[in-house]
Amino acid sequence: MLKLESVHKVYNKGKSNEFEALKGIDLKVNDGELVAIIGKSGAGKSTLLHILACIDSYESGKYCIDDTLVRNLSEKKLAEIRNKKIGMVMQDFALVDDFSCIENVLLPLDFSRKKISDKKTKAMNALKSVGMDSMAKKSVNKLSGGQKQRVAIARAIVNEPSVVLADEPTGALDSKTSAEIMELFHALNRKGKTVIIVTHDLEIAKQCNRIIEISDGKII
Ligand SMILES: Nc1ncnc2c1ncn2[C@@H]1O[C@H](COP(=O)(O)OP(=O)(O)OP(=O)(O)O)[C@@H](O)[C@H]1O
Ligand SMILES: [Mg+2]
Image (cartoon, rainbow, N blue to C red; front, side, top):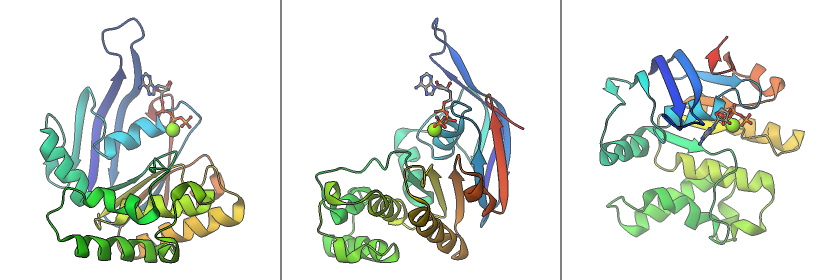
């Protein structure tokens, strides 16, 4: 379970360009939910997702993942939580372009003590689950947008996290490819994973069990 209580996020605190991007977010997401976060550009969707993913901090309030309060944790502990619990698909894929698909998917396993052959099996399984195993050795810069998105999803799920977060995963895709990518998220959700998707697209949002709208840093 993910739970936010009165979470505030301030960028550039104490400087002249200080900006409060989240103004007291209360949100509870139960295990196995499929949730959409919508809202206008600049509303704070990515900011919220980054906090949920433990890749950004917040100024006040509380964020708990299951029984762990995510606040003032060491970088080591944060990395451990991210590795075990959370898979993140970033707004612009954030793949390493001149790496192959499998090399990208292996990245989150870099720090694991597993044998390299086991890591490769895991990475291939993740690629298989998104239909990209046949292109494992292909360089990412030779892929289409939809194929890149599939590799980004494979990388997010390679550690078998219980929560998958995706920032505009269909933003740059045509409608047919969007539907295919959404089917991957539905499949992950059917397997019991909590899935949270940020989207501009109301049609995508309607496919989720719950829609949360953010406006000007607040849930409305
Ligand atoms: N690193 C940063 N430093 C300062 N301000 C920031 C930073 N990141 C985001 N902001 C500001 O915080 C607000 C929320 O940004 P955020 O990226 O969360 O919006 P968003 O809802 O994801 O928008 P989009 O739909 O365009 O991706 C915006 O006004 C943005 O300019
Ligand atoms: Mg964004």
